[in-house]
Length: 227
Length: 227
DNA sequence: ACCTGAACACCGTTCAAGT
DNA sequence: ACCTGAACACCGTTCAAGT
Picture 1: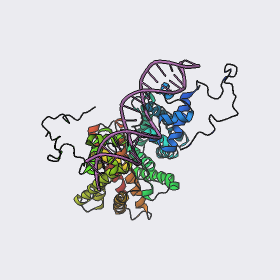
Picture 2 (picture 1 turned 90 degrees about the vertical axis):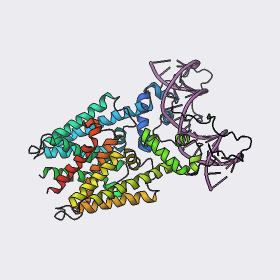
Picture 3 (picture 1 turned 45 degrees about the vertical axis):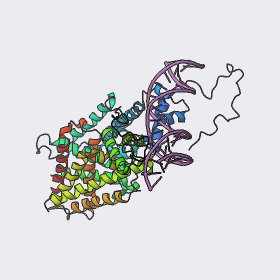
Picture 4 (picture 1 turned 60 degrees about the vertical axis):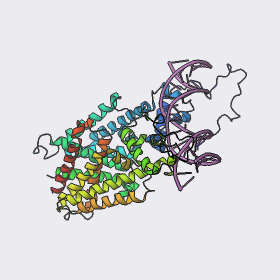
């Protein structure tokens, strides 16, 4: 629908067709320079507009003004492009988690709360990034060196913090693993319910989505620390 | 890859080419009869094999042995086909929930547990159906008459049962709504973690997925009824 | 070394024409 | 009333040829 306006019809561009060597073409250099980075940016933009599922390599190339085959010199496949996007998203995710831990008071309950809130904040403020990471059918999770490592780091932190919650010592050995799974399922479920468009069904409007999710996390924490 | 074997080369079929009116063609009648139903079955089969995202109308038509345009006489679009599939899936989901309630003892905790277990059972035993319903980008949720109604019925049941949990009367008015969201987010999160392939990351192998999820539901219920 | 553009095998969807 | 098959505008991916 959207057209590239003013392309090829611009009468003000230099008419150096007779002696091309004297005036090097500034408009469309044959080599893009940093096509890889441009592809990632355009792909993310497209994902934000139409959803990660509708990112097409051809459309990305079209937006940058490059041929349909060019992207494949930098990414072996559409999946490889999306995986690179996922790696960037995962980096941001881990940063947000770790920054939240640095800001939080040292007691276990505060740290667990900071972890939960960081997860929710990140997923709700960057829903496209969250979708790219979580829906594994778009990316080659196993084929990435950093993706598994970063996710494991967050999981290890979750397990560790949950284990320090008051009353956890009195429970059966390994109980904190079960609590960690429960906590992760809850925040993941909240984030996915939101990106899957299920909040309207629960009478939660867009503007109230983030506070509602944070409140749900707080509710879980309050019942976890109670006994 | 897979070929329809023994089609069109079968020498035993009636050779009524000279007088077609005497022997009506049994092999490939021009009218399929119940194409609509066949399309739904083939589409579900394809979704189970390759995932709901990879269901293509052309491939569905090919498997049934019908032309590429034929499906559009019965479904306005690929989305309409997937929506019909979702409506079937939602019917099964609601049945499972209601059957679980009938089997359960009458006390609130048992009924909540039955609700949670029914959700998990259904999602884990029919992952394809679960994915079709939950990922809204494949279907026209708003355009379906039954989808919203069925989901609302389950949500209403969730809110009602959570409100009957012991100790809920002592809480602030409307607290059971927050608990219902928390409970839903947890079961939804568990189900999505599983179909999104995240259980291996949590050292939960395929054979242990269902019991692990049920245990997580039980853990949540145990902390909910504690105070 | 990097990019083009034609080519191939796919899509969803439409629509005149066939039965 | 229902189905066919060509047509159109898309895809992802490959690869000889161009710069």
